[in-house]
Length: 142
Image (tube, rainbow, N blue to C red):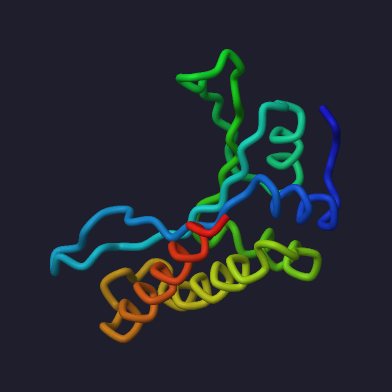
C-alpha cells in the first residue's frame, strides 16, 4: 500500500483518470428520477486506488476489461460522502475544475434534505436536472 495521498497529488490524478457524475438511482412515486452523486477513478494500479480509499474513504472494485488482459480497479464515492473529497481537490484541479464545482453544488442541493427525500421541491429537482445535464455535456468532452 502507498499510504495516504495529498490533495494536490489526488487532484492531478483525478484530472486525468477521474470523473464526477450525477446518476439516476431510482424513480420516485411521482415518476421523477432520484439523483445521486458518483465520484470515481479507474486505474490499473491497485495500490493507488486502495490509497484513495484509505485517504478519502469510499469503495474499491476490480473489473476485467473485455478487450484487455489486465485487471483494472475502480474507486468510488457516492452521495454526500464525496463532499470533503471535492472540496479538498478543488483548489488544485485544472481540467476537471468545473465538474468538481458542479458536484459540490449538487451536494449542496441535497444536504438540507438528507433523510427527507419526499421534501424535495420541483425547483430543487429542476436544479438537479440542470446540473446533471451540464455535467453530462462536460464529461462528453473529456
